[in-house]
Image (cartoon, rainbow, N blue to C red):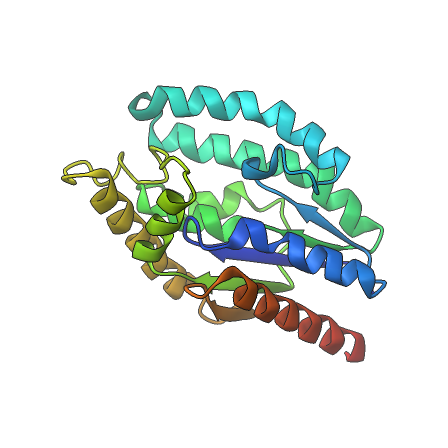
Length: 231
């Protein structure tokens, strides 16, 4: 199978990060060479490849500093730090895998920046230029998830709600963390719906249990790869 880029997009806690590992192993069982670009969330995940562990350990310190700074870290600094993070992952993990013909599965792609950074007031063309080093994706999986369900998943799994994840820098007058999270992630959801129009994307209901969502993701990925083989 020729090298392909498959990006996964959704609002926070839409099963995206966990979902990337499911097609990884299933594709491997079918003899399809693939590589996953994971997020910071996977720094200590036991199934992550050793090279991913190395990159994540190098990036984690920067993210700890950013989270501690919170409101002192403005939209421009946040935009550039995210771009630096993605560039490092792409150059050290994604690009080499793509060059040798692997299917690269990214648990976020440039559309994350086109959603979050633009909502924070960064010019869209500036963001597109910033990420122009990245090839366009061959296929996208968009997990359409309700902000309310996303919030409940975080809380029910004992996970903290991050300052930027909740959009506290955007929704400054929200009465509480839940309202801030649901308002900001609702804005992200609306923008995803707008920017993904016309893209090669499979829109999947992310409100369902993980097993159902993962099964549909795998089916969509396999269909895309099969169509690519025929083309």
